[in-house]
Image (cartoon, chains in turn blue, purple):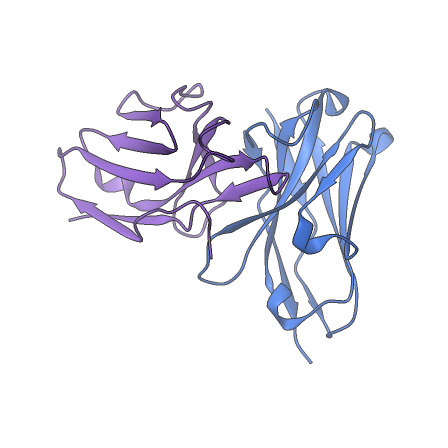
Length: 121
Length: 110
């Protein structure tokens, strides 16, 4: 069965960086993309960006350009999302989800369990 | 503030039919597919409707999606207590070159 397992919760100080991992299993990793999303406490979903698990092509949300980097490792079927210069309003649950390989427009059909990132001094 | 506009709440009694609207513009819903996600309390979202009106495998046919112009709707018929959740619409936006989500609708089953 398709599974996406994310790394554990972290607490970071403002200005620090965080890197969240998303290990995929149950399907051919290279045939799909990985989308990253986040959800601040009590708020709605926000799309952060997408990476092709095949080519590594990326598409980032405009408001995160320059602070976010998405990468992948085919050998371990793992995707990563690094967010830098953290601020308090980056506190959220971060999700990875399986997308389509061809681009960022497609649906997210399987989701990870979420990773809580808390930014606090 | 979300560019896709959803009512913040909706409600119904068991067995009823409820609809949730999602309003956008020509740069998003007007030109691209709409997706709907269901988020049960304390869990990750789940894809409910694909490409405007397609149900992924395992989604009951009580759930249906539609799109007209720059608006979309999710309909839930035969409402059940387990349908109580947050529902989000989403669509690609050509102007932003990114995916937009609605603000979410909290469905209460009375």
